[in-house]
Amino acid sequence: MLKIIGVRFKSVGKIYYFDPAGLDIKMGDKVIVETARGVECGDVALTDREIDETRFSSPLKKVIRVATKQDFAQIERNKKKEAEAFEICQQKIAAHKLKMNLIEVECTFDNSKLLFYFTAENRVDFRELVKDLASVFRTRIELRQIGVRDEAKMLGGLGICGQPFCCSRFLGEFHPVSIKMAKEQSLSLNPTKISGTCGRLMCCLKYEQDSYEELYRTTPKAGSVVKTAEGKGIVEDANLLTGKLRVKIDKSDNVITVSKDEVEVIKAGVERVSRNEMKALKGLEDN
Image (cartoon, rainbow, N blue to C red; front, side):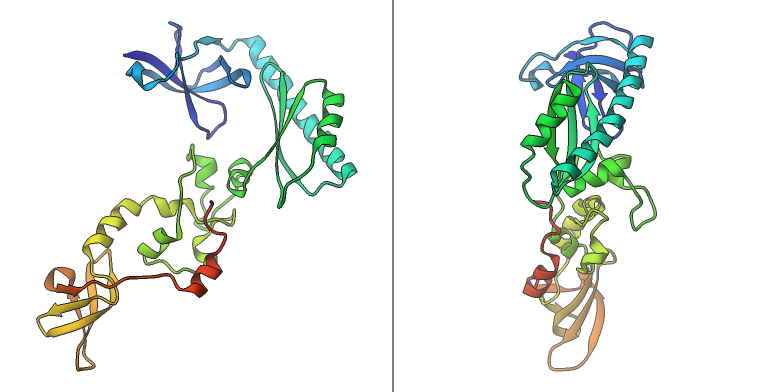
């Protein structure tokens, strides 16, 4: 077993594992570590954990030190540099007439690199922009085009539920969300009802999906032919949460409401998303 700590480099970001190297490290401490991007400062999100070392393909990097007063001073200087770089980059983008939207600037702790995050509808030729920025800051420059979900995570905001975005509040990583989930949860397939501010399917559709999949598997679908106490009929509607079915009895206009446990499925129905619905929902899935 290997003793590890977990470190985040963004307030709601992915957790990376490091070897504490015998240091007395507490939750919430800032630590200096070496990463693929260079020396960075991160917040300790996990402590006193032991994991089987066979889970790691390569040895974990060791924590260099717990952040000192000098390190905190360096962090403040970096923040000022990021704000300055953001303004300068905005000016350069306008000067080069590039169709891109600058979202955030990040300076590595050791000042070895400046990263500029932006969104754009199409590919952008930013080679001249990089040259201009490199001549101003005399350091390595990296521009990264990000998606709309990452943009929402960085900028934050309020969702239709009135709460801060899940992605900027507690979701460390994005999970795939599909139209199939909305369909199985009997939600309206109106794009304005199931999409977030980012214009993609809401992340919260994923939260209860496992439960809905089990209910969906054990509940007759609309269009199913079932046998009831009053005879054979077709399921017109199914409530997954209550298990209640609305069944139209054959050779009559009677529509009855029964529990799913009170019927026998003769032929299972298949629910599909129509072409018109798919056309309206095109682009909501984050491929």
